[in-house]
Image 1 (cartoon, rainbow, N blue to C red):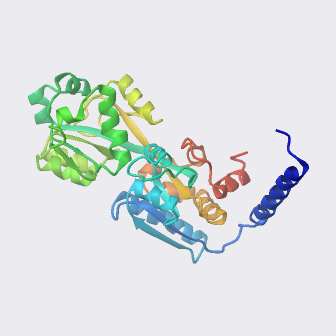
Image 2: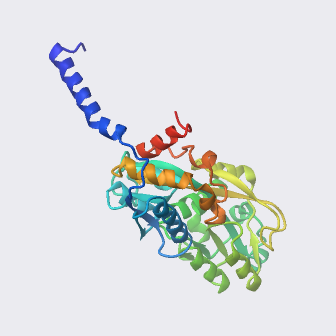
Length: 343
């Protein structure tokens, strides 16, 4: 439909107004040492993510003295919920399933959050799905692989993460079970034989003989697993690489080969899934805050690498490419353009 002159004039005025509103931010110079303020949400009160978050926050505080950076314990899904609704600013452990469910408004999210949070950087791709079983259960049932479990419908006492931790349930045991044709209810007595908790809860259940199978995320190697194996012999549950690849494709993940000897009980290379975690920020977080946060980390890459072995591969090449399906946050995009990493 052809616009009348008044209509075109109205559009021109609106466009001019939009430019005038965005121009000050575009001209602002963030190359100063003025402090910023932000909160990080989305992980447990203790353990790996608290250590990583506090170390990263420390780098930002040193780069911008006086910065107020706080850590709010929670969960990966809860972190996205909070940054998307303005209660927090960043989360460091967004994975493909939380992002997809949040965009769609799928439980545990109560409404679609698409457009309310944006990509900042990839943190790592090193959360490895550990598929473990006790040697006693494996030998008693003649099980060496997921294919065996599918064929025999082997009853098991299973430990997995909390249902609300989507990346450690949906993209781990549920996706693997689906790829191999294992019916969760059938092998766990309709869920009655499932113990849910974080990895520490699972390790304790293995150690105490309360479960037969452990499927959860950890980094390689994890000392607690070797410790459990000293008192209760373990085996890795093998999985056909082609079916593992199908499981990985479900969520745009990669498969990874855990080499023989990574743990004392591993007698051959094994294929499993690697989960990525991204830093994302709420749409309301200022361009300056995200720009300075991003700059602080990229100007201290060696310090980021030294925080934890999972971050040893952190680099421009690993962190800037965006496979999340989210748009870049303007602050991150601005910094990446300045260093020539983004057009």
